[in-house]
Image 1 (cartoon, rainbow, N blue to C red):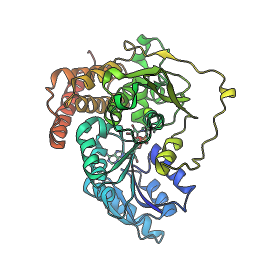
Image 2 (cartoon, rainbow, N blue to C red; image 1 turned 30 degrees about the vertical axis):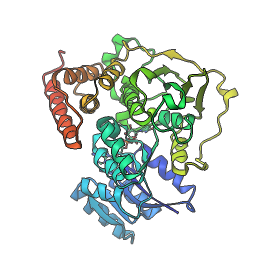
Image 3 (cartoon, protein in one colour; image 1 turned 135 degrees about the vertical axis):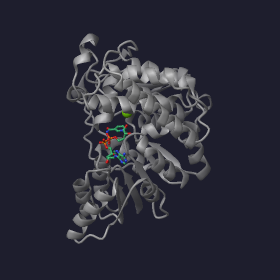
Length: 394
Ligand code: NAD
Ligand code: MG
């Protein structure tokens, strides 16, 4: 029996994870669940999955959750805040942690799970983008096993040899090909993107996801973050990572080998497949996802990624090549810009301008410690907010 903590249980990935766990009650039990503000949704999850502990974002939310749980006769221990998130991630009773908080808020608890030597199921790509080598070092020092949940990275993991050690040359890997749907605006006239609404940006053609990653998919910053994520997970330099547009999202990514072989992982676009893969690894379990019907899909299309249409993709490659804290600056500026877009404070095409401004004006440095990374994250957020407050004529 594996005991699981889910960080971000009420989100898109959290809900899909609970769906898979519910199919295998003989294999998995839930130790702890967290949510930021959706207290009622978390209470319903607690009623169904009976975790020992639950963590929310504030004292008020904790009081509300406690009242809801006690009214149902549940004794789940309730707490709030970052230290409590780190505690449920690192608790000695936990075997595996699903890291599914969105954004930089997930860094501390995800790192706590890595430092505690847990099996870390990594959905929170922002945490790895920010902390890079520090995160990998923490996992290696503790013996934590990192299993990618992002569908592309999970696909690549499946296409690499068992025991792959972050050394592409040793495994005969020529390059990694990250597929990308291109999002909802792949073919829309670039000039018309000034006018798109958050609802249009969040309407992804193939995936139903949280709002932040949905906007990132529309700008393709999501793929940019994934390029950086792939670098840290698999040890591939920027020059050996290619982005390929594949609108159907059936091939989740590929590995090209020096002998000309290309291995791909295919499946219906449903996150329960990578979640089930990582949960059961190296075994396989039912995920609830329908078998792929290629005859019905009939056509798979591919095209090169257009860096002029998607400037965020170019900014992310630049940040990876620049190294140090550049990816943390990129990530922080993007988080602020996406929230400003969702709040109708800036237009869609200003997102990349905010990110570019921050990268060009905030001096980066060495990512020598988590504290150094967090300091740069704070500087980038402040610079992004100042730029946005400066008005729309940019
Ligand atoms: P979501 O917005 O649906 O859920 C986010 C979760 O994080 C919620 O449970 C929320 O309560 C929690 N949260 C938000 N802000 C928080 C804060 N400040 N402190 C603590 N908890 C907080 O997001 P999602 O789509 O499930 O994505 C989660 C992560 O997984 C992201 O990093 C995303 O990039 C990654 N991911 C998601 C998908 C997908 O299909 N949804 C695919 C690949 C990777
Ligand atoms: Mg992905």
